Amino acid sequence: MNLSKLRAEVSREWAEHALPSLTQLIRIPAVSPAYDPAWHQNGHLHAAVRHVKDWVEARDLPGVRCEILEIEGRPPVLFVEAGDGPDTTLLYGHLDRQPPTGEWAHDPWQPTFDGDRLYGRGTVDDSYSAYVAVGALVALRAVGGTPGRVVMLLETAEESASVDLPAYLDLLGPRLGEISLVVCLDSGGEDHDRPWLTTSLRGIVQATVTVRVLDTPVHSGLASGIVPDSFRIMRALLDRVEDAATGDLPAFHAPIPDYRVAEARALAALPNRRPPAYPLYETTRAVSSEAVELILNNTWRPALTITGAAGLPAAGSAVPIVRDSTSLRLSLRLPPTVLAADAAHALVSRLTSDVPYDASVSVTDLMLINGWNAPPLAPWLAAALEVAFDGVPAQSIGLGGGIPFMEMLGNRYPEAQFVVTGAVRADSHVHAPDEWLSVSFARRLTVAVAGVLDAHARRHR
Image (cartoon, rainbow, N blue to C red; front, side):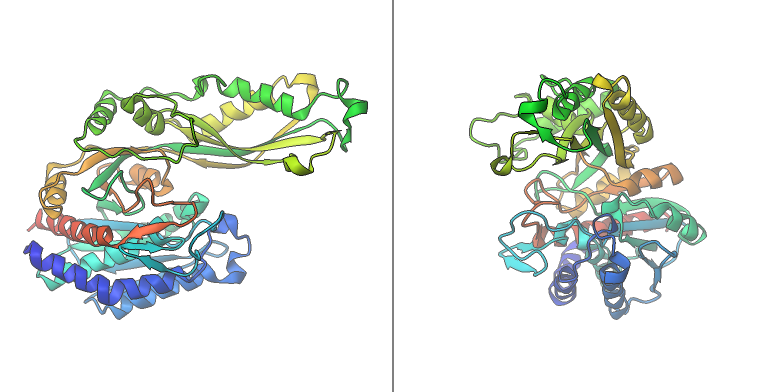
């Protein structure tokens, strides 16, 4: 395969076809069902799926079949089939997005270019994935390569923990065939200089815990010292879960495999490494000065974040009362090998057992996502990625977040190879204001995916 011609075809595909369609897709406010209860009536998820389907069909690829699938009551998915061969590659991405919270410098639903960056909600997480996947097929065929049999699955509820995806995988089971390679484009790495392979994903338990002590608020001058403060009780309950001094969560650890520790050391020692730069305020420090410890903290150790609160008025409008209740939204990140259901059970038990003053405690709105630990990378796959990136080897990295689809597929296809990669960088503002995609890196990923598809198919020629 002529890489120079492949890159030229990919550049043309992005300039003439992918970017014009992607910018139109960003204008569709396809918010994930968990954040848009009226998603079916609003129709944005359906509009996004139809838009991509129309674009794929307009590319006029020989033998490509597109179908929108919709199980009653569940958000739709787009399923695409192409080619033939003894083994099947599954390309995965999602079209739903987080809501655009916070202050944006750019309108989240109006695509904005600034040099190589395309701003907009969902640009890098991960509406671009469809264009990388299909662009790779188009360019590969244009230079005489053979992708083999490929299926693409684009869901619309990934940001809602992919709770509907198992039903679609059951529905599609016979049509998927023998999956021997999975390419997921919903991840990323620390820079745009090399291909990054996500080798582990943390799981998560999200929950809302509420401590209630009164039917209605009471004047603090009359009740304080008599009625226990709900926030103090909440603080005591959280101390059962997390060491407030260190942030450690003893009940939620799992052994870290030696090869993942070695991987973290290799990442920390990477020449010219530019680790993520977070906007720490003034004199605030990271929790450790050791790079390896920070990597393991973010990828293989549990961590608790308070992501929301209720029952606490803004400081400027607070009045002297004993409040009736305090609610906190907890986000508990889990080691890749800890089952989310087990962690949820342990969390609920600690928060609701033997509560001080017999206060009422409820744990609601649970969202559970299991983590994932990748199988070893086959030599042919590592070589294909390295060739596509001009001899730059892929760098392995654990991811602190989760991709529910990977754990599902890992269980269904234990012998498959996984390429979990993407265009996300630490400063891409995923889930935050001013999300952006590097268009040039998206093109490089398209070349890499084309090379991987060709190498996968050539193993049986």
